[in-house]
Length: 368
Image (cartoon, rainbow, N blue to C red):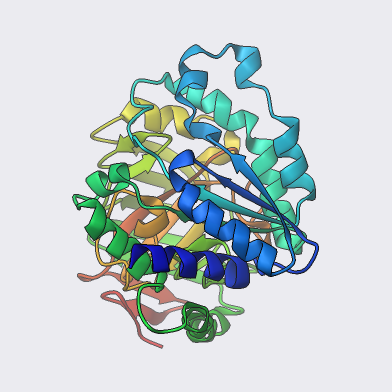
């Protein structure tokens, strides 16, 4: 089953997500643990007439760099990576860590510096992605480390991953994600021209403006698994407070009990029960890191439980998530930052979203 699922996932990434066409340059970037999927994807790109280039890539999770690198090394951006992000037609990133806590002892200021260094690559990705010049997608290959974080065996986690991507059954996964796109487009169309959102839940009381902003339909083009609709709030419009339901994990750090207070868009109060210093240093990375770049609703009920991995958790049907930091220009967001950190609220028990005074969402289900 896993081998067949790997082949189906590779086809899905090449055909539906990266939409590879003849003669396009496609970067396949991943960790050594992801080689089975990288090899399958290499073949899938070739079959579609593309030019695959495989890069082993540790990006922001390079333990040796963060622990021993000099300032000059931390500020260095590989010209190979610049070439890929600025000129290639498609990028497929495959996460496959063997130890998700390898950076627990890293200096948060070193991590912030490394993240700021990569801001130019992130900006190239979102800017070229907004114009259609770059097709990019992030996915994950199951490893023991991810399985342990999710409190599963490796086999259980493989089934979970392939189930969330809808590549583990008899159905055609490309057809499935096209249907998801159709269903979500109805919701996106309903939100066109709307102005204000209010979120009310046990752990959240927020208002934000979406006037002039666009909700986008995420159905497997940029993430796999996928399943969300999202936008970039008007930067100075967010007011209220939120207490996030699940731990946030980024750059090898798990941050629990995160609470934010917003005033005129900016996070003016922030706290966490665990790793608060890291949270505060991340928010101080640059001016944009204290503003929301994204507000989203998860729609994938194939993601059946939280796993401490945002690629899956933010898609959980019945949840919302917000990202401090960089927004996506195609939503109308003007927020720029080296940070993009998603955090989740569960809405399935009493949560409500009101749009221009109309009940849009309640208890994890859409009401329109």
